[in-house]
Image 1 (cartoon, one colour):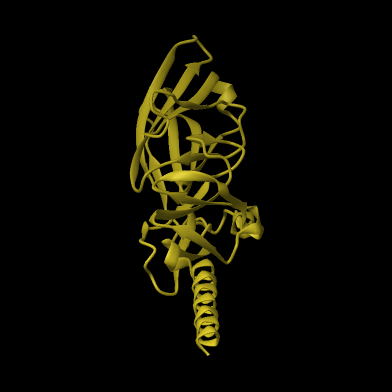
Image 2: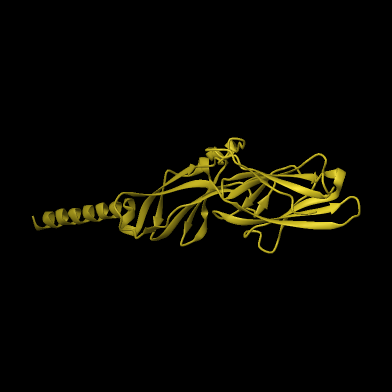
Length: 260
């Protein structure tokens, strides 16, 4: 009888150890881990009826990263179609980042759309699944410069030099033959410097017109330049017209020529 009791107690002990072992391998909390779900959305529309960047609303074009303590983890970089619905993580601070396009201060190839989530602190003691979600938005403004057809009648050369905070010591030059839009990385309501460079055809003299315009991400603006000759004195100047058509209203600003 004693031997049978010992065998019974041994069986109970082994069963308890087996249950404990299974529980620790299946429960992420017992090993200091938690489950986090990942969600990505886009808000890529520009504030303009004349601009179409609809391709950036397609999440399939996005790269997604899970950052731990501010660092990108090699195993946690996916195309949007490959991201898991949830992932097991250890204790730490996490952010979800998603982006599309060329991350450049100024680009004529593509705009840059990015989103970085708030920081989620994971202790490994949480119950249930926590969520990291991010909304991706353009971090740039779209600028187009147009020159009137008769600019070449009065000027041998003309261009616009653009300077933003993101460009630092560098500049972007819009030449007289350029036509592609430039996407400028800007802060909200950033003052962007634009220097209009002119070389007069008649005598080769050059001059500059310094302007500052306010630009924000998701904003589209067209800078239109045209020569103007005053009838009374026959002096040559420049007319600057800003076309900044938004979803709510249209706004045209004409600045009189300042270079004579």
